[in-house]
Each structure stands twice: as structure tokens, then as C-alpha cells.
Figure 1 (cartoon, rainbow, N blue to C red):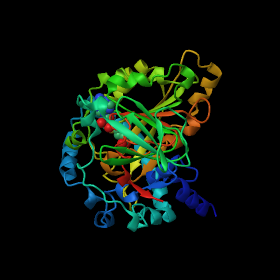
Figure 2 (cartoon, rainbow, N blue to C red):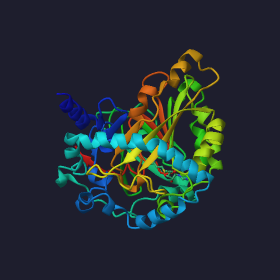
Figure 3 (tube, rainbow, N blue to C red):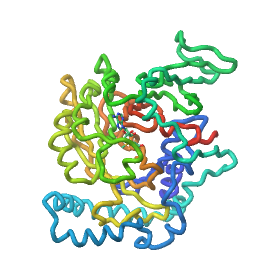
Figure 4 (cartoon, rainbow, N blue to C red):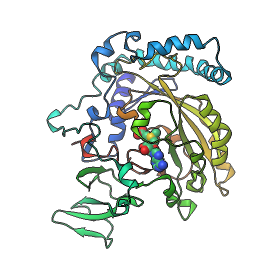
Length: 421
Ligand code: SAM
């Protein structure tokens, strides 16, 4: 039956498309797994909150975060005196609300999927679990990258013995593997093989997915990623900037940057001759939306095309917060636009406008405010040749076939986030 098909597709790919709907439920763990051969992502280290049965079994109203009742009261008071921006934000919310509710109804009706969702965090073979270090005991790439010794730090890639990597002078045969030692900062570190590669840096172990690379640096060095020839540029550019944010918890997670810094991102120079789809994560602040529409996209040379929404649910399918909480919406927005180079031919460009607006991506949020991997959901809208050339800016993880840039692209590549198959 169709339902069974959808379910088995989901178990394979992590993608569940609701019939005749613009909504899709995804399991980021299953989606990331397609990048690895010898490892799989450990669900229990990917997911953390939102699986607590005590929280999940209670009604939605009781499961709000502790401070939210106060915020709610504030919201009610404010509603009489919303300023212009707040009114605009509210207007936006009122417009997307019915679609989000509809998507949620689809999810609630998919009882087969709901039954599986409760177990998405389970690692199955728990005996193979690695020790999970306490938060904070992990390497801080951001801090190491800033000190004067940064250029001296090296990473060792250990290619499996059956894989002789391209014969560079810097690849040395070892007893059962090939080793390559490379500077870890301000350098493009590449796994060009079709297999996962283990890597060592200081006393940590990492996994690099097949055909992936990372460049770990500060924003100041991003220009080193601009290709010499534009036909070596990228067709899909995903950007999740460290927007300044009032939330203190966000500040603890990573440093943020004022908006003007993002104007200097060389989006056009990174774009492939045939054009690129640019996907930008934004927060729900109206001031930021204004900045992106009026300044950032025009400066980058990006034409707005559509908005996708990421709707966040708990393991029981209920929303993580009340849909109408003003400052804690249970959804985030992904703005899509197209960037073209001077040479991009206009016939191709005419097909670019066809993105159906407002796709809704539902998932259970990962730990450390990780965004779900949305690349695969965007592929049908990406211009240019296949395989698609993809880059993620401000990345904290790597994906097979992608280039990851940021000041901590190895953040979630530690061996402790994986289980050996
Ligand atoms: N998309 C990522 C995920 O889902 O895990 C989250 C990205 S987070 C919003 C922004 C990232 O930008 C953080 O990893 C932060 O450390 C990094 N960042 C902040 N300032 C930076 C800078 N000056 N240069 C490079 N990266 C920076």
C-alpha cells in the first residue's frame, strides 16, 4: 500500500512526504547517514530534548519551557501596543499559521509515522555506543583557531588500506593505511575517496564523510574558497549565519557577528557559471527580515524566490512551544533565492522561478540548536550540472559531496557522535 511505501522510503532516506501536501517530515539522522559507509550517526547524541516521555505525554500547554508562561502574559499585554515592526511580524505569522497547522494535521494523521517517531532517538545496538563526553570537554576549534599557534596545528587523515588516495607527496603508506598530515586551520582538507576517513587532531578522533572537504577559518579567510574558474563554483549555497540574538543561551553556543559582516560574504564569487540556489536561515525578527530583503540579498546579487519553514515538533508530534508565542515560535524560516553570474544563460534562468512557495519541513530538533540537513530537499530546485556542487557557510558538520566552511566545521564530526556499523 501507499502508506507502507512511504514508511519504507522514510526508513531508508529519512524523508516522509505527506500525500498531496507541501509538507514533509524528516529524520536528520537518517538523512546524514547517507554520507557514511562504515559509520552511522548516533541518534542519542543527535537528539536530546523533546523525547522525555514525561514531557511528551503531557498536554501541550503543560510542556512549555519554564519561562514561557511569563512571556505569554507579556505577549498578551503587548498585543495592544505593538509597534510597527511587531505588527509586521504578527502579520507574517498570521499568514503562515494556517499552513503550519495544516502540516501538523498531516503529521497527526500519519499514525504509522508517529509510532516510529517515538523511537527515533534509540541507538538500537547500545553496546557499541561510545563514551559521550560531557558538554564542554570537547575541543574548542573556535578558541584554538584564534591563538598564535593556530597555523601549527595539524590533522592526520587515515585512509583505509584498500584506498590509495591520489598519490600526493604528502601521503605516507602506513602498516594498514595511508596517512596524510595537513594543517587543520586555514587550509582545505579533502577526503576525495568514496569511503569514510578517520582523522586525528590533538587527542580527538573525527570522521570525514566520502567526497567531502572542510575549510576551518575565520570569516576573514573565506575568500580563499573562491574558485579560480567560475565553472568550479557552487550550485547550492546554504548559509546559517551567527546572527546577533538576545538569547543568552545562543551566546554560550558560539560567537555572533553584527549584520554588516554578512554583507561581505562573497556569494556571487562562489556561484557557479550556471547560477546557484542560495538558502539562508533567518530568525523570526522582523528587523532581520527587513535587512535581508532590502540590503543583504541585493548586495549578494540574490533574487528572492521562496520561503520554506522548519516546524519543530516533539517525539509525540506536538509542537515544541505554543504556535502563537511571540518570541519563541516553534518554527524558523529558510529564505531561498537565486544568484547568477554575468554569463548565466537566460533560458535556464526562466525555470528558476518555479519553486512552490512555502514548503514545510517538520522534524524533531537536534541538540545544540543544530539545523536539519535540508540539501536533499532543495536539489530539485538547484540550477546547473549534476552532481550538484554544494557548500555550507558557517557549517558545524560535514556532508558527503559538500564543502563545509566555518570556524568549527568539525564540531559534530567527533567519533563520539557516531556508531560503527
Ligand atoms: N548550521 C549550523 C548547525 O546547524 O549546526 C549552525 C551554524 S551557527 C548559526 C553559526 C556558526 O558560525 C557557529 O559555528 C559559529 O561559531 C560560526 N561563526 C561565528 N563567528 C564566525 C566567524 N567570525 N568566522 C567563521 N565562523 C564564525
